[in-house]
Image (cartoon, rainbow, N blue to C red; front, side, top):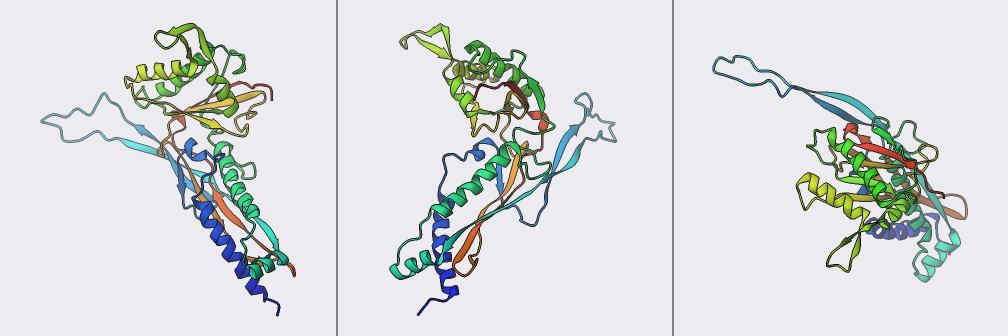
Amino acid sequence: MAMETADFENVLQEALTERDTTLQERELPEINIGEALPIKEGLDFALEYVDFGVSTVVGSVKDGIIGNKTNSLKTIDSDIEWMKAPVGQWAKAATWTQQELEKIARLNISLQSKKQDDLYANALATIQYAGYVGHQGVKGQEGLLTGASVQLITDAGNKTIADMTSAEFVALVLNAYNVAWKKSGYRIQPTNIAMDASDFMLAMQKFDPDSAIVGTDLLPVAAMDRIMAALRKASGNEAFSITFVKVPSNYAVGIKSGKTRMVIYTYEADYLEMEVHMPELLPVRARDLLTYECGYRSAFGGAMWKQPQSAVYVDYKSSPQ
């Protein structure tokens, strides 16, 4: 006797739920948005905007001294500008035929997981895209590389990373880093530099041809080593380490025509954050007489720049694609 529609739905739901448990625990190497900015999970699907505050401390360091006759105190307040981060609602589905489900039910075999795996990976990739540049389908959404209030510097040398010498690349990074650090009076040292993955690999290959390290087979000094050494010296902390984040998929390319963008910032939820609802498996349903569908749903708020003045963008000439 033929199985009822509800039975096929249950067979598919059980198989997808089992695979979803595995997917939720698996890390995809191409997804690194969590390394780029702090992620807060649990975004409510009902929200169209996420509220967050951009604050500046008002007050002078040249007053506040009290004495025996002081009967009133100077006050200090934080001005908070409330902002709204537009939320993107996302969902996609895949279909399975009744013939597939009949084989699973009759032969007790596992469901082919590729459709579900691809759906889940696409959901994460979409969240990552929104985190880096804001989703074009969500009006006003900003990303790590597209914050409207973040200061922008354009490289005057107008050279690609490939064409820069080791010294020129070091100067590009350190000069911009100094701009970002100086904004806090050198109190809050930026922790992260995010740059295009291809350009990062080019930069890793840059060495100073005129320098050598005695005792290590006369190895030339890498540009990245010079940057790290300079920042450790400036911070007075030999353990300090700047984190380079490799921006994938050319997301950093073409934000401005002919330019590639690098961002120097502090990885801290008080400065920058993204709220998301991680991909959630939807209930299975019959699509028509012979097919069933199921999918994933997620939501994301883009990058919320709570302290945009703590960061700086650098636009430099893009390498040929």
